[in-house]
Amino acid sequence: MRRPLMMLLSQKAGLDKQAVRTMQHLRDRYGPGPVQVRLPGRRFTFVLEPDQVHRVLNESPEPFSPSTREKRGALGHFQPEGVLISSPEERTVRRPFNEQVLQPQRRTHEHGQRMRAVVAEEMNALLDHARLTGTLDWPGFATAWHRMVRRVVLGGTARHDHAVTNDLLRLRKDANWSFLKPARTRRRQRFLERLADYVELAEPGSLAQMVARTPGPEGTAKHHQIPQWLFAFDAAAWATYRALALLATHDGHAGTAREEVETAGADADFPYLRACILESLRLWPTTPAILRDTTQATTWAGGTLPAGASIIVFAPYFHRDHTRISRAHRFTPDLWLRARTDEDWPLVPFSGGPAMCPGRNVVLHTAGAALAQLVSAEEFTLVDPPLSPRRALPGGISPFHLRFRLSGP
Image 1 (tube, one colour):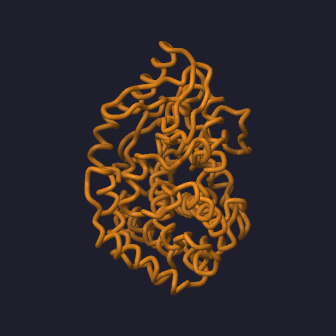
Image 2 (cartoon, one colour; image 1 turned 120 degrees about the vertical axis):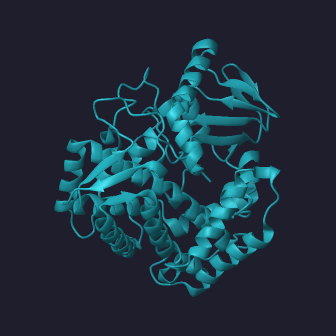
């Protein structure tokens, strides 16, 4: 759970750019790597070259397992049977179930039309409120976003169920402490039982309905997969809100986005707006460190890593390395208007390979629809903090402190 004050202090201190410079220093000093770094109680191996990133992601979950010690300690607080921290045997049934419900092979989910209707209603309600005050801030955006997500994932009955969101937020705050903090088993049980109730209700058009009607072999723990989807949607809120800030400060891109919305049909998927959200995630990854633990010894150019080694793909290093990416610190949504392959530089906002986030298209579809609703209805002026297309974008920016003034359509 991100802490607003710490994110603001990190932004002001430029810690994200410092981290990228540290990675560049490792590469310059030690060569192409991978490079091992010893931290208190743990040794981590950082990959430094594109082929290493593609190898780690393409060869997941074996021998590069997403179920790392760090993830088990953190995610166990609110999704103890989630696919991300499952054993190899459990993963064989849980990952296919997640894919059946979330449909990553489809650009638009079969419930896409219903999702767009929910997004339109909630974003219009947000706009009505913002027009009364003349401003849009994070608390207002987050409240509308959580209402939208509860309806998309759990169903319309959950629109006002702030308790289920608050329980998850409280458990995620505990997760910041990983193994150092005992699990709140009573709260976690209440949270998971509430999710099970929504699955039983199975409201039409919701992902809970998909969970209810999708067969799951023994060990699937069907409703235990939902917390990760809610968690992922929270990160999507930051990406969408930051994308709005980018469009508010880059007139040419904003014009392209509005033109896309104006000419779109009823079933539009908004590829340019999706690209803007992906670019927001490139510039400011919501998951900076992609973690893997080796399940067996792996051989590299510089030697052999034993089983149980912890590997890190530090996304900001690959996304913002100005020595290798000419527009590393510029808003460049065109990067995402075609499919990317292993021949491209690794830009990995949703990870990659067989363990890529199965909810990627659901998230991008709903986030793109939300952004479309906002930019087509109003012109937003970013009040704080200032961004400019004439300056390099900051290494980090706190979504919690972005504030907009409404200027009219």
